[in-house]
Image (tube, rainbow, N blue to C red):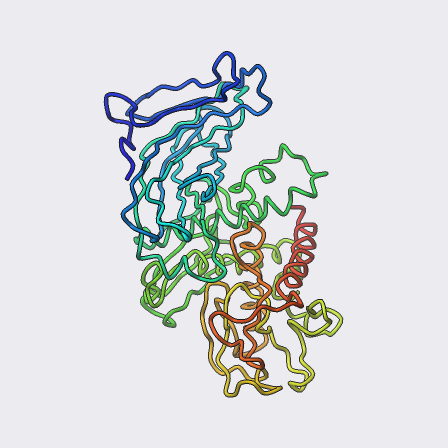
Amino acid sequence: MIVNGDFSAPTTAPWIIYSSVNANPPIAEYEVVDNGVFQFQNNGTVMGDSSPSVVLEQYSLGNSGGQNPLELRLQLSPTLGPKRVTVILRDSWYELRYCSFYVDNALVLTVVYMTTYPRSSTWSAMTLSIYDSTPSANNSFIRVDNVSLCVRPSIIPYMQQPTTADTICTQYNIGHFYLLEGMGEPYRIEAALASATMIGEAVREYLTPFSTLDLNDPAHIDPRAAFNQVLGTSSGNYIKFETSVSGTNNACIIVIIPGATIRTIRCHSQLNGPAPNTLPYTEFVTTYMLGFLFSEYADRISGDYSLAHFINNTRNTTNQIEDEDGSVVMGNISICNNAWLRGERGWGSGPGSTYATVNTETSNCNPSTKIFTNFQQNPMPYVNNTDANQSTGSDMFLNWVYSTVGRGGFSNRSWNPVNSCNTTVGCSDASNPGRQRLIWMNGIMGRMFTANGW
């Protein structure tokens, strides 16, 4: 749908660049540079405009895909220093989607994606806008290349999940995450990079309100630096992703060798592709697995500060999670002979388990088989308390990440079999169990960050 997306044509048409109407002299500077890369700049020289902006646009983009999902891909980089770039895809100003990307690597064009779902119309005449909204005191340009927009009907089941946002923004730059790819399939490393981006953004978002911290510390302005800090990755300490044909089907394991510089996430080859495959390998799988490594690293630094440690504490009635009505969300359930349950309320997707009976007072006491969904990667039943604590800790981490960046995660819904909510849609829950899970996790993450000096 994009014309001249690689800027190789003799002119820049049909791209158009606009700047603030009140700018005098004009604030936009632009040119095609080496190898057909387009660059433009908001130089911030403005008279009479309190919020100068420069936008690169292409309009009247035809869409023959109806209301199928759309995937926008482009490459961005600054010429000097970090930049925040906003990308908007719209059918009108009343029907638009946007992503904001932080790009700081002047040496490498960073690949970014916007995956979106035009729910209310067919978007037959779209406009793509790329904004450099911040004046560049350091004379930094934004470079743009290889812009493409395509219809992606294969991801309809993924985008139609009830808790999935209309738009998913993904930024890939493997060099700054210190990840090693040992799997071969592009979708796996893309899932890993998407996950790392989400974790980094969540940590950055969480830390920002508490900044008596040094705001010049890269961990508080760069999601990649934040990820590296809380996962313990650096140029000498890597996380490697591998595929194996041995082990448990549809499962991943963590391999940590004491003293080694590489920690490995090894997934069975049966996890054989992106959604909507029957056994998809997605960023949610990766975020869940990285939750184990986050927990292990935090515990290794400070001791007794693993996620599993705090989940185990919910077996004590003074530490259990309760909803706003005082009912237990996760903890010991009195009508289940005081057995500990992680619960079917407040997760970002569900249900987590099947049950022998439904719609009785004790239906939720005995989960019989697991149901895997985006935000419940390893629900009940468990083989022992250690399995329960570790798996639930990583699922709570997964939900916390996406809740913090506003891309799903904890929700005020119930998948409880007691009241016929044990379906993929679930039921709305006015006692706000998702909010209470998030509040609990914010408290736990705060204690872990403080203990480790993050």
